[in-house]
Length: 119
Image (tube, rainbow, N blue to C red; front, side):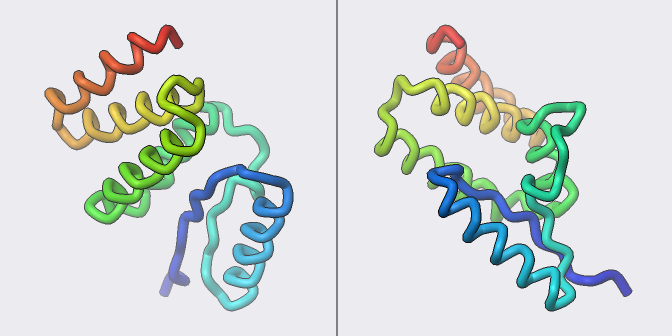
């Protein structure tokens, strides 16, 4: 029987926050849970954005992931402003997520927003 697994996605707000997330993942692993975290990886050949998408796909919990993606985007927009470069990349990732779910019309709106950002 495979151990339970969890993919931990988080904001890189500060070194302290990253250390807290790593401590959580270490504790989960010590308790027998396969915690997947970027801090355990060297730079993946496909890049971090696609690596994260692959982790979501492996979990197959798309219905739970989408509200979290929307919430994260809203929080970042409020914190950084809608024109911040990180927002453009989040929008692009959300568009990829939607396109992979067969929701092309919704993805196209986000892709247009990403292109308009000039990134």
